[in-house]
Each structure stands twice: as C-alpha cells, then as structure tokens.
Image (cartoon, rainbow, N blue to C red):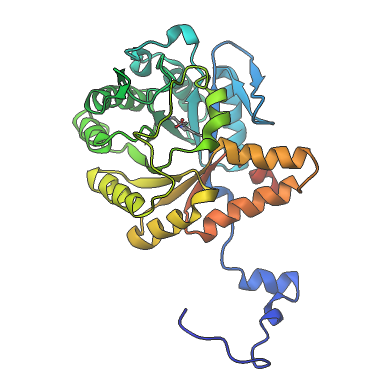
Length: 333
Ligand code: PBG
C-alpha cells in the first residue's frame, strides 16, 4: 500500500460505496466469461446424460452430448472446456494402456468436438487414474507409486491427446519431470503449438471426493495420494513446483484446489507473473450446491462471489463446474 488513508473526515471510505454506479466505477476486479474453463465428464454410449449424485447439476455425457455441450459452451462465450473420461471398469488395467489408445473416450470426444465446434479450445487431463486398476495417477509397484516409469506413460498419453487435437495439455499427476518430458516429446513430434497448463501446485485434498465418484475412481483407489500430491501445510514448496514446471516448459500453471489455497494463487501470481489458474474443484462445487439446495445460502450469489475471489487473488482464469451457469448469469440470460 503506497499511501495511508487520510484521517476522518477527510477520508470517509463509505463515499465510494454509496451507489451501484459508484461501486462499479471503483471496482478493482471483475469476473468475465473469458475467465472460464469448463470441466466436463465423458462416458460411452449415445444420447446419455447421467447425473453425478455428489455434484448436483453435473452429468456424464456420451460423446454426442459432449458435442452439444461444447456448442452450448461456445455459444455462451466460454473459451475452453476440459475433458475427463469415465472409463468402463473393464478397460482399467495395471498397465493403463487405455490412457494412450488413440480411440479412447477422451480422444474420441476431442476429435468430435474439433469437427463440430473447432473454435472452442480443448484441454485434456494427463494422469493414469481413470485407466488404472489401482485408481492412482501413476503405476503402482509393491505399494509404491513409480515416478520415472509413469512419466514415460504420461508422455504417450499426452502425445495421443495432441494427435487427437487437444490444444491444452493438463498434466494433473504430480510426477517429477513430466512437464519437461512432455514438452520434449511434443516438440519432437510436430506439436510445438500445443500448450501445457501444469497442475503445478496440486494438493492432496479431501475436496476431490465427488470428482472421484464422477470418473469412477473412488472404488478403485487404494490408499491416498499423499506421496505425490502436496501437503496442505506447505506454501514455499508450491512456489518451487511452479518455478520448476515453468523451467521445464509449462505455458500456464494451476493451483488446486481453489478456495482453501487462495494465498497460493496470490503468491504464484506475484512471484512469477505468468498465466495463473485455479481449479474450483468438485468438493467446492458440491459444498456450494449442497448448501444452496438446503436453502442455507443463495447459490447464485455464492457462485459469483466464490469465482470473483479467484480474480482478486490474482488468477487469470478458473476451472469451474459453474462455467455455463455463471456465463448465463453474466450475460443476463
Ligand atoms: C486426477 C484428477 C483429480 C482431479 C482432476 N484430475 C482427482 C485426484 O487427483 O484424485 C480433481 C478435480 C475435482 O475434484 O474437481 N488426476
């Protein structure tokens, strides 16, 4: 703060709050549709929209319905969607080869969207958990998560996503060295324009619970993810991770979850000045929706306020399940 406020009554800070017009004039941060990335769940079948019980208003869609959703998102002005597959349990294996199958759900959905709505940017998730019989983001051996072997698999997965047409690759696995390995492989295979949005500061969080239901990983997961995702008590480590991922070739970085980690968003933006995103995760969405459904809070207002908080904390954008709802609200529709 460069200047101390003058003493009362020279300064009456309420002066600039007296009307909606003046509040608008002095408002420091705003939320716009350009700030939104919409995460959506893909499943197999046709004409299917299957509700996710722990995420009211969220559905798993078959590819044809995903295309409709992408068109709707584009019409609302949402710049990007992020695909998460719900994989048939029969296709989950220990070697996770479905992850780099060119015709897996995520890649099929990417091609279908690129065909029908080429303008919308597609982000895809790099991690083995939807395909892993253990529910972990990496290979498991003797109860340990293998780092370097996993990175080799993640590179194959990322390349298959880039081949399918994804513009933004989102490694969410938290293995060491994966950003550099993926960047090198993208460059070597003619994908120099493909962006990497690194889940750089991803914490081992209870707030992912509903997501694991949505992608069918809850039942499969043995143990927890604390040997690769971050300890919630740490903040210096988040900055080390962000710096490292940028050095390895990330174009954008993410903090995840969002609301309990707004301090991290602010530090990342201040320290690095790079495109910074927060993921308002499934548990955050479920809390707001659950309270709203019980009549305990005004859901629409809480939605907008929670998202504005990310802008105030320095984020350039937010991954949020509220994306279409808030886009409609912002456009006055
Ligand atoms: C897994 C992944 C997770 C999320 C995105 N990618 C869950 C996890 O790490 O267990 C969580 C998203 C959410 O909760 O909305 N690679």
